[in-house]
Amino acid sequence: MSDQFNFNDAFNSQTMRGRANVAKATWASMGLVYALVKLHRRNSKRREAQLYCKGCQQAMLHA
Image 1 (cartoon, rainbow, N blue to C red):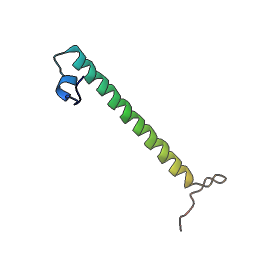
Image 2 (image 1 turned 135 degrees about the vertical axis):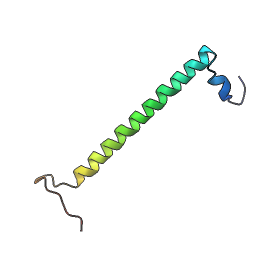
Image 3 (image 1 turned 45 degrees about the vertical axis):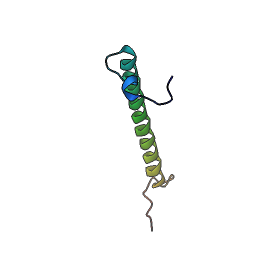
């Protein structure tokens, strides 16, 4: 195995190995985007929940 990564050899559309690498990279990037969206939504729900009083469910004013 060579010391340098050759992008054209790894993602060659003419070979089965290259096509498999493209498919794996696509699935990995989609999974990463999904995870980032889920984390962002969870954090925004936490931030929104901190704005409300737990007992009375009224918005607390920031002075």
